[in-house]
Image (cartoon, rainbow, N blue to C red):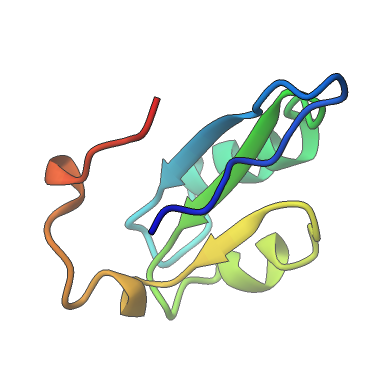
Length: 88
């Protein structure tokens, strides 16, 4: 059962964005993700970031209460991300 997307003011559904980072350190991709979550349009987008469980990004991302952060424990027994359909 799918959960409903968060809604914008006026009742329209927000756009879901999933950022996936495989690095455990904070390099170029990590800095991009941190800049992204600091500056994305919170009125129109709902953001989830998938990271390795032992990622150095985790404590930094958890400072943002309005995003969802998931570790690779979520993916260990799941199908590969490339095969997961993204709802429209």
